[in-house]
Length: 594
Image 1 (cartoon, helix red, strand yellow):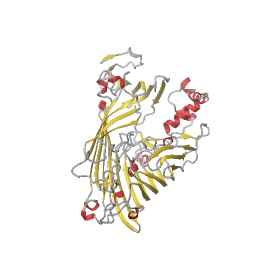
Image 2 (cartoon, rainbow, N blue to C red; image 1 turned 45 degrees about the horizontal axis):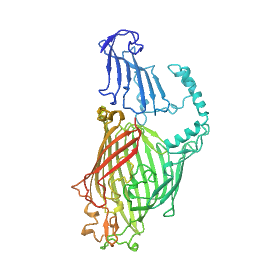
Image 3 (cartoon, rainbow, N blue to C red; image 1 turned 60 degrees about the vertical axis):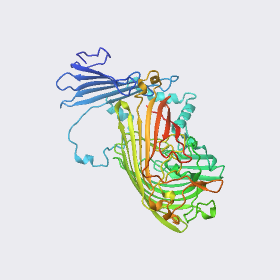
Image 4 (cartoon, helix red, strand yellow; image 1 turned 120 degrees about the horizontal axis):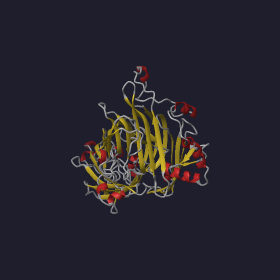
């Protein structure tokens, strides 16, 4: 700590008011830890107000792609006495790779015309916490010339002409075209900025894939953009499997956000656990499975969905849907009629049909979004998510119809541990209230591929556990290199530690348990999935959990490998004596983080 009275700082040559200040320097305990270094200039009087903040990151910081960063903030007193921020200047130097040129990004924000007068109550009569002027992001250059607090430099004025000139460089457009297709997973049908794409082709990673039912699968898909119609959006695909010689497809209007009425038709093939996949189930990367998938089904799905969001984080969904499922491979629907499971197809139901109505309410206060061509991603994962849903409907075999009711609730929350990283927690539970066949029971979200997926169990097999009561907890701790940054040589790799634990508690009540004698002749229940052996016997692959024994798997991983790879080791701690399960596995994914 030091005091001085100079017009310029002797260390960094920053212009400083002649007011006597106290300079407070700070830096992280370890230069590779996440945190700022810099100085605070505090007025040396009884108010101890901040006059300037000069922030940056250490040279050896573990922040990816950011080589230098400097944030300069100036504060000044108002005539009424309040100390306010008047200028916020951020300069960032980015480096993607050593063989590429560095990028400089600068953002300058200036504030003026402060007013602390009381605002009339009628001004706040709108939904949500924030109201955005419809024209806020569509101002003309004349508007900014009139209202800009500072004039643009010569280089800043020529930035628009520079971008236009860059696009005319020979060979630049193909590079930009390929880069956008790789990053966005869609190919635009126009490269002319004056004639933007009206239809995008993709996702690219679903065009050529493979699974046990389709064999080689080819898919052609596309979606419209706002350049075709600003209010109506359509995405669709057709796919063909060369093994089953069947066509599949989807047609769906879509729009982000906020008040959508969507009708979807989908006819395809999938494994039952594919319903939980956050990405396309025929993504070429997730088509490589760590286990043999023997139970799949053809489905034909109609859905009418009203999705409505409010600015303050509330989201409401009302859905009416009907689906017809036809089992394939070793999956079949045979009622409990007092006889064992049989491979005789004449004793099986050819399909199951459901019709239901679903209400889904979620609350995510303070969330902001990034819209991509394929999905919408939350920009601030700090916002908690509370959700509650109920599904009521009928399922039928032939002319008989039976009711089912499923209620689920979940909570997601991220906790920051300062330089020790962050902990993500995801708690979820649900109840199936009625007596139902096994497709209507609750199966855990099991990831069957080698590619890691968030909020899914990594070592549970397809439909391994079937419950009508369940609770799950998924907790992960990203330590941001807190330990590796203190190990000689290893800290140069800038790897980051990751540990996690996934727990599932579940039970199957007596009314839905097909293994109990009391249900042996109940035609509303079906034999659980399994497979027929060479000697004609039947082995169940789906089981009821012991309510006294939860399923537990632990994970230890390393991410930020070459800044893009995440690799982890998964270990199954309970239900390890079940035939056909893997006790451990290696999972990986591509994930770029700062």
